[in-house]
Length: 283
Image (tube, rainbow, N blue to C red):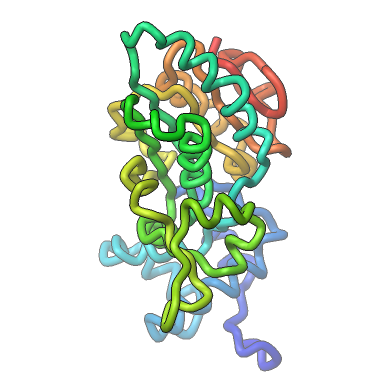
């Protein structure tokens, strides 16, 4: 144990074993720069199980009794960074380009089904922003359409957080005040400093835990848009290719996929055409 930090030391071989277990269970690649993060977060798991070393914990993870611990292990090592209206250009594209065209194409009433997938939804800020954008565009006419937003994430804890839809004041601080008043309830008393998403938004959202490494996503819909932003940077190129083959199959003809500002599909897939601002169209 490090006497300065009170944390159990992580040896080179233990770090390698843990990185291998992370990859095996999530396909997430962890480099040396993640070593301190892994050691810090997993020290809590050692204390939970009253283990003295990471070698003991690794042995436990590899045992037949580790099924439930694997969930907590994955939750501990994954990173969830998100904000409401993050990379707002994608939501502006929805309002100014995608939705007007979608309405025009469906003016005859033949197809009023709109499906959007937030793949890597974290604590829910992204899917709720999508729904707020839909409300801002459609207004009271939103109920004329069959609209559903799916939010999925690897981490069961953040999926539960999204389901609750309760956020601290600092999380909603940058939301435009008129939007905040329209779509959130401000807490009082013991809930002072917290905001809860209104139920009228929640009814358009379904949430589930999903691991991208699973061959069967168990999703029956085809989507008009897939948001998968700031997610693929954690995967190697081979798995990125595999994932976007899946996404291509889950998209309707002419549908869109949105990725993060630091991500690209160059060298990943030729099944998508670049539109603008990390927006791609299904070929």
